[in-house]
Image (cartoon, rainbow, N blue to C red; front, side, top):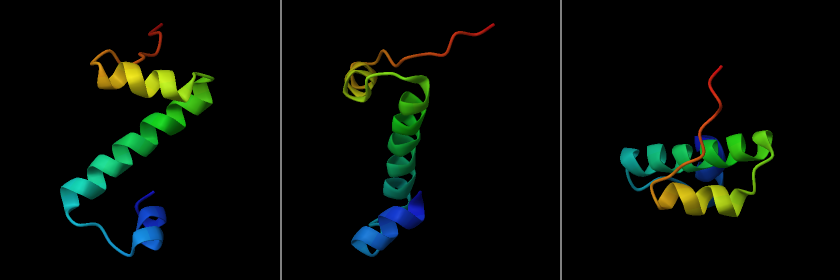
Amino acid sequence: MMKTKQKISGTFRSEEGALFSDRIRSYISTSKKQGWNIMEALETAIQGQPFLCNAS
C-alpha cells in the first residue's frame, strides 16, 4: 500500500505518516471484505468504537 501512495504524491513526509496511511487503508480494505459500510466503519473508528470481528 505504501507504493500506491508513493506513486501518487512522490513520497511520504515521515515514516509515521506512511504507517498511519497504511493503517487507514488496511481498515478500509477489511471493511470492504466484511461487507461493512465504509463511511460508517470510519466514523465509528474515529469515535473510538471500531468494528470488531466476532471471535469464535
